[in-house]
Amino acid sequence: MSTVAVLGAGKIGEALLSGLLHSGRSADELLFTERHPDRAAELTERYGVAGVEVTEAAKRADVLVVAVKPQDIDPVLDELAPLVGPDSLVVSMCAGLPTSLYERRLPEGTPVVRVMPNTPMLVNEAMSAISPGRHATDRHVRVVEELLSAVGKVVVVPESQQDAVTALSGSGPAYFFYLVEAMIDAGILLGLPRAVAEQLIVQSAVGAAKMLAESSQHPVLLREAVTSPAGTTINGIRELEKHGVRAAMLDAIEAARDRSVELGKAHED
Ligand SMILES: NC(=O)c1ccc[n+]([C@@H]2O[C@H](COP(=O)([O-])OP(=O)(O)OC[C@H]3O[C@@H](n4cnc5c(N)ncnc54)[C@H](OP(=O)(O)O)[C@@H]3O)[C@@H](O)[C@H]2O)c1
Image (cartoon, rainbow, N blue to C red):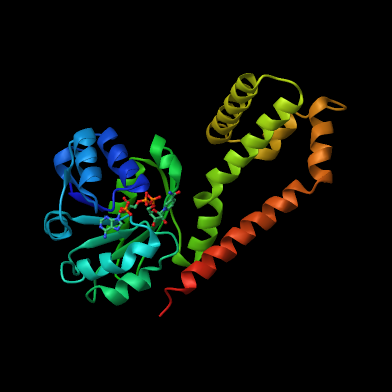
C-alpha cells in the first residue's frame, strides 16, 4: 500500500481523503497539506489524517495529489521542484493544467498523471478521467486508477481529450442540477407544494440515473419505454424538440469545451 498526500485539501481534496478512508485505507497511509492551520486542525479532527508541510509530504508519500485551484499552482510547483523526481508520482486534479506544465517545472523524468474528477466524489460516485504525461508508465496509470476507483468510476483517455471530458463529466453534474431545478419550477407552476415537487423530481432523477447505470439499454430505449402512443410524455417531448433543447445541450457542452481550451492556453509552453 502506498502513502498518498493531498496537496490542498479543499472540496475535492477532502472528498478524496474521505473516500479513501471509506474504502478501507488507513489514516496512517494518508497525509495532506493546507495553508490555514484552522482548516488543517478541523480535517485532522474529522478524519484522523495528519496535516504536514510539503517537504514532509514529499518525503513520506509515494503519490502526491495536487488539488489546489489552478491559479494557485505556481507556488506549489516551486515548492515541489526540489523535492520530487523520477521516483515520485505527481497526480494533478487541477482543471485545465496540462502535464507539460508540470514536466517543464519539475525535474526531468518526474511522472505526472492528469485527472479530471467531478464533485460526486463527495458521495463516492465520481467520474474521473485520467491521462498519463510523458514520463508516466502503465504502472503509474494503474496506481492512479486504483486510487480513484475508491471514490467512483475511472476512465483512461489521451490528454488531448481532457477539454472534452471537462465539458462533459467535469461540468456535467451542474447541467443535471440545472435540469432538476427547472423541473422543480415546473412542479411549482402546476401548483404542487415545493417540498413535494422536490421529492418527486429528485427521486425520479435518482431512479433514472440508476436505470441508466444498471440496465444495459441505450437511453433512447429507456425513454421510448415511457413514451406511449398519443400519451402524455410524447406531448412533453414535442415541446422539448420545439424549443431546441437537444441543440442547446450540444451548444452548451461545446461552449464549455471551448472555455476549457482557452483556460489551458494560459499554460502553454
Ligand atoms: N470542485 C469541482 O467541481 C472540481 C471538479 C474537477 C476538478 N476540480 C479541480 O480540483 C481542484 C481543487 O478544487 P476545489 O473545488 O477543491 O478547490 P478548493 O475548495 O478551493 O480547494 C483548494 C484548497 O487548496 C488550498 N491551497 C491553495 N494553495 C495551497 C498551497 N500552496 N498549499 C496548501 N494548500 C493550498 C486552498 O486553501 P485556501 O482556502 O487558503 O485557498 C484550498 O483549501 C481545482 O484545481 C479544480 O480545478 C474541481
